[in-house]
Length: 127
Image 1 (cartoon, rainbow, N blue to C red):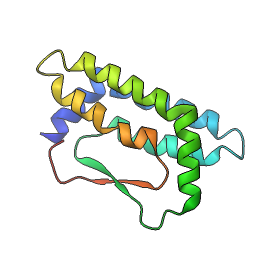
Image 2: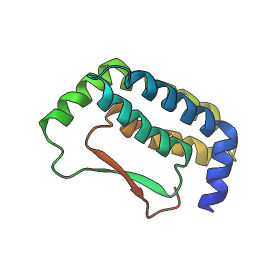
Image 3: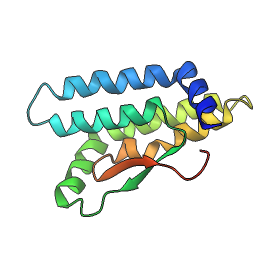
Image 4: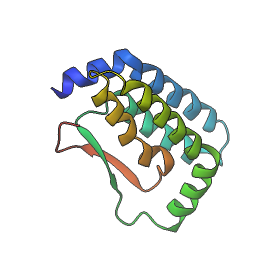
């Protein structure tokens, strides 16, 4: 079931979402100071391409710099990414087939708002 949902996800927007996160990750890696944001963007991109069967968990011992980086990320990009995921989820939830896709979009909001100090691991549930 996870594979089928992931294939539907990739066809109906997951590929473009992945491409956007990769593009902005490359842009962020152009400056030395923003390389951690680029790496975070690449991590989110892998999750955005294949979200079903995976989940986001806190990294133990992330540290103070993770918190500070999360605040900066949220103010610069996280809020806008969350608004985009909510808008897309609302559009996907209109159809019955799109409801799991909408749930996956909403599941991405915590990591797109605060990506530092997080890991993406194999999940326990179907979504």
